[in-house]
Image (cartoon, rainbow, N blue to C red; front, side):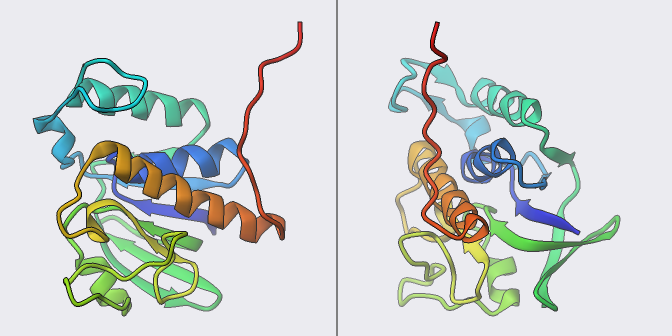
Length: 184
């Protein structure tokens, strides 16, 4: 059993995976490479003056890989259900178990619907400020939770919020991922 499974390899999914893996949670990302980022060019991402969407995704993948994320490129999540104290995640290749699941499949909300997550009147997944759905320990991020606010930086922030909530639950207290430079 893994700690965290992330369904989706765009900014939201990779953002969540970065924080969880960096902080020693076993993290698996299923990435079909269908992110809208391949059609984007970023001029409005804080700290980045200009970068093509594909280059951004490749750099993001390299970054999460450096922290030990088990990235299953090309393997699509086809089902998610509650199982015991966690989740059973199904792909065409296998079935996996995790304590937490982060749904980051863009505007495709089918997995959240199948899991039984509540939806808003705008037909987006209903989440709290920590991105947790009505299903405990299941998180939804990015375009799944926003009617039309589909920005990479917002999605990455959603992923980070989900990850920090997971880390807070695991640590038993509010967790802050705040790095400082090494003293010289």
